[in-house]
Image (cartoon, rainbow, N blue to C red):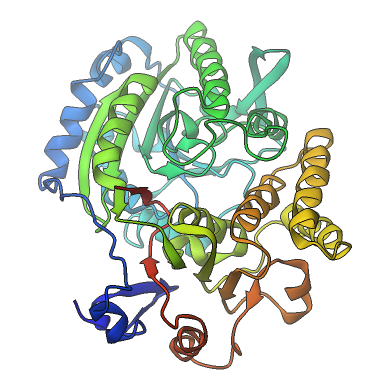
Length: 462
């Protein structure tokens, strides 16, 4: 292996040739053992139609659902927002739209895309072009979900009133166009996540997200790739079942399309059917597609964020990915442009509270634990979306130790550096590859190193 073959993404740049060749030759570089590649789906149109007409689980075919439930109203297609890569959306949406019109005879004016923003801000026009593709976007009739307005009641779960997007709920048919990927607290995204948190109102999302927390951090089984006994997923299941049951009472139906995009950006899985059964089947396949092995944890992990490097909030997924590859007391370097800054004000405000508590203590380890305790109490008493991120970050900081989280970025102003537990490396006016190489010169020495460039990797030792 040559250093030029080891790469990490920084926005639209691909950085390479930064690991010294001597580290590779002396076996200090620990390579990721990627899974065997599954066959790429070539005939996407045929496979998609098959997914619509040969459902997984107890689900009628889309043809039958349309025959029995379509009354001339809206057919909604739930799609991801700008915070996701949307490779699957660009591949599948144009074909699905064409099939609904030509094969299923749905008038084009009755088909709406509902952008599942959850609690995120609305997507911009430029971001919408990236979601659908520039050629397709002009033909998209869409509704932007807003978690604070235009939502309707669908039922109650454990005393919590559940509301979802009114356009989707009032549609004759709702199609979830999802891909699945590992998620740092939901376990596995896609499938039911398109409904909750995707198109739920703020109180519903807050209720579901609060299930992530235990006494001193994330609760048991709240982690990447885990849905079994994951309290977030269990609560999501109850909420989504309530949504689906409520729609059926009104003679409306939900059909799920589930896809997997592999580590190289290729479509390798595409099926449809009942929302939970199709998600469970795909989750098992996902393990074979996205589980990456390492022979041992490393002293240093350099972690790129790929698409998620757009802001600090989303970049946290890369920090969490590195957490599974670094030794206790080791060092993590995140490499992400963060051009959109923090990405969430609640994250910023609560992070300041945590750093203030840490700075009160000469014993930083004790300060981190105190900060975690204070922040968890704050979150439980006044949860807002974004407050989960400081808990995840401080848990990782507790594992590696104060001073061992570093960041090369462009979008966070120097005035905010003291609000975060990162060492911000280099001058943003320097080319990023120069910053990365000078960091390597200072810290690598004779240490072992792992480079990971996708936060969706489920890294396991063995």
